[in-house]
Image (cartoon, rainbow, N blue to C red):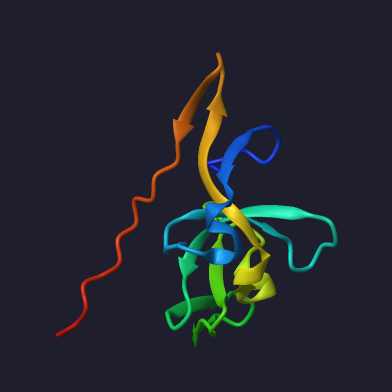
Length: 126
């Protein structure tokens, strides 16, 4: 999740009000049970919600595939796209695996920084 979060030491504040994906929006950073690694957790940014269309990069053959996020799932991506293992690897994430929304991270000196969702949904095409 670099540059937003460092995997080797950033501590985060999480709100469990958003457990199971309740109230989650595109752009939110979420903590979830890893779908491929037993007893592991991960933090990623939501890039698509049920019904949204997302691009899945297929670098091996140079093709891009568009897919629709199924009901009950979301599409998550790491902020460091070239190094992230995310939905492009393990597919849509079941909303039931979401443990909460990351709302802040600790900073040195007993300070913290709020994590804000700066992504905006595009206006509907008329």
